[in-house]
Length: 147
Image (cartoon, rainbow, N blue to C red; front, side):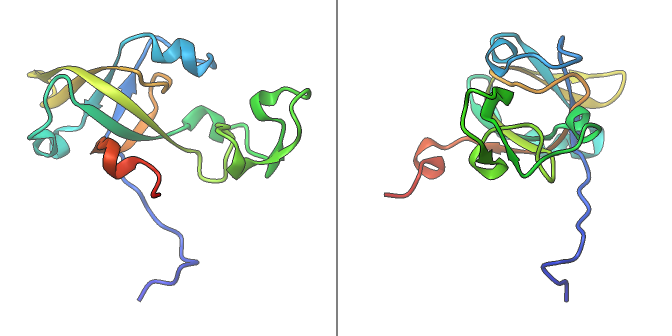
């Protein structure tokens, strides 16, 4: 039986293709279209997704991992903001470098050359090459805070 302290292993289901190859504000990234390339061995998992659907995309902040993290920081890396714990911020510099963003599917297409499925999306704030570790349908009633 696994212990809560055991290391875990996560296999990316795909990766992001985006015009952003370095840091950019999240709001700017969300305004540009990007692609989620789902690896062939996971392509059957997109069945049921449709253009117009919103998806919760979990991805790895792979470039931030090279920089490291602090447990306390100024939100937005702005010293004018009071210091906070990393778990009280949306900072990309986190212990496990995992991010979650709701994106909207614009189109779903096959890549005949690779066998991958490509989701054309808007609203995603992931850099080019970010490993995607999961996709879930976004359900406002389910994803909203409990009363």
